[in-house]
Amino acid sequence: MCCARSTLLVSTELSLVVFEDTKARFVKGWISRLRRLSEGVGNALRNDPNYQALCDISETMRCSNVFTSRFGKGLGIVGPLVGEDSPLYQSNGVYGMFMYSAFVFFSLFPYRVFAKICVFMGIAANIVSAYLAYILFFVIEDICVVCISTYAIGFFLLIASIKNLSAINTLKAETSLNFSSYLDGKGTPGKKRV
Image (cartoon, rainbow, N blue to C red):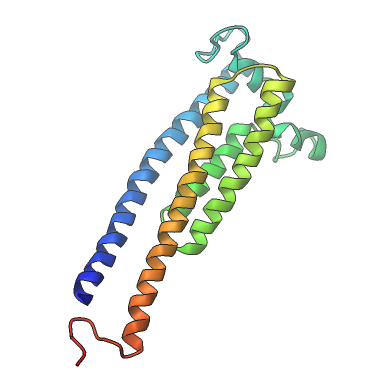
């Protein structure tokens, strides 16, 4: 029974690693696409005033309005705080790129501390997304398909991070129980106690 349990734990660990690798590649691909889209639209709008972005669907659904607004860089608060000539005053896509890259990096390792960092980043990302959604709908009064997609990705990353932390906690608890019963002398793997 112990050997079967050990095999199950190893199998569960391998499943987590394979799941994490697949999830990381999927998330990394979408993050890269969204970042390139947002950066590309922003750069094209700055360099060519006649540029028409693909995400400009109608007069009320225009990514261009959002990317060129004062809230499109530095979340609308970095510029007034540190100045527009500061290296911290970047496009929101740059902040997102760093945050998503950190998500991918930390989710590659099945350690509780990294899973907790991902949950914390997910909470922070959703707070920032709520702020930006408020700006989008009530200040700029526009609908940005790319922006809403990033809000949804942030929400799903938070859910995935919570599930990942839960799975790691469960796995650690099972591994710890199995190991502690071995240390207590209540059994050795593969042998029945008389």
